[in-house]
Image (cartoon, rainbow, N blue to C red; front, side):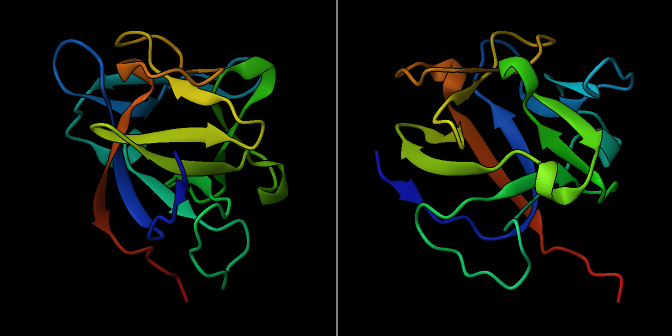
Length: 153
């Protein structure tokens, strides 16, 4: 499928896995590369479940195929990183954050890393892995737009 542009903003990222609705979630504990990112049930506290999708550099226009970075909405320095083909959130400089593109697929979107690997949610509670893309529902996501990026100027 062809890459699609995404409106920069605050999102909840829903996983397509069997069971109750699950969201992309930062865990509360850190390991070697940061806090593992998993899918979990909707949590009333948005601190670990709302994400900002934005361009790597401010002022860029949304174009099909252009890269995006993703970070926690309430921790602007905590971006997604991808060591060893697993997804973590870590407070590292923005240029070290992983970059992603989005493709429309049946039932949602596929989120692809700059290496062309797809985010995959195996089951609720499992760490998100990056795999060679296949037409599997565990690699399909829904982006729920929550609102614009709030500036602190």
